[in-house]
Image (cartoon, rainbow, N blue to C red; front, side, top):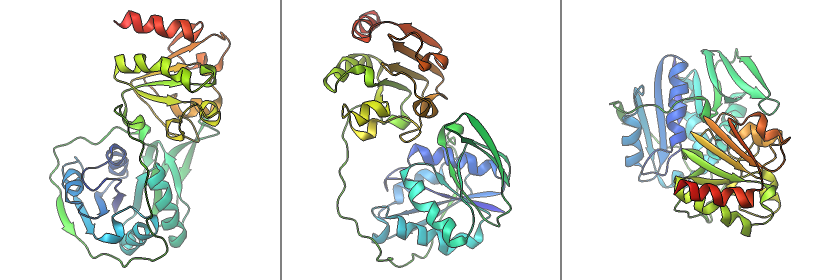
Length: 309
């Protein structure tokens, strides 16, 4: 029995989500192999080989994999799928684009967003926006699994796995990379940040989000938002935290002007410490907050920045 982790990377290094997925793969038992499909991806392969618990890194280097097209990477996974009892990828946009294709061709049921491995064939995953946990047992010969990375610690370093180059599949020709627009920010990436400051509809406007910037700067935090704030056009989509946005679990999550709709709570309630600032003392966000401050955010946040020095 062996598990294959489909690595998310930028050809130079692994994304943090891959290290969490490796931990989940280890819990499934057996050897853990990591697939690095990219172009000029030696750096990512080297990073994967150093992850504790990884026994082999499979590298496929070619132009069809340069931009992470799901059709080509799924075809590569399928070419070696018969060697594995488990195929895992992070439950990010990357993993969610690839593994359903793999599961469909293998004619197995994908097991989505697991947060715990109870046994090699039994997993836990949140349902009903995180209000219940389902225990899922699979009898499929190959378990195709996406991993909610907040449920697993990142794999440590210190490994020395062998790196093996494998044959590449041909370009599927079903899709072509046209362009990519990347949001540039000096702040930490949202899903990897240790501290997050998020704003909600209570911010009132996009301009008012600037009130949160000094607080985020003081703390070295990433900035996020509720879906309500994103839908209102206050901030970009990639700031969204929640069931339909990004799932985060930082050491400190500060929710400002966020009422706490169930969909938002599903995306951040695993944070180690939650601080809520809201003028409505009955706001649902206070039900999950470790510290709550009832007051006008336009008064409270500047005072908090001042206190932080």
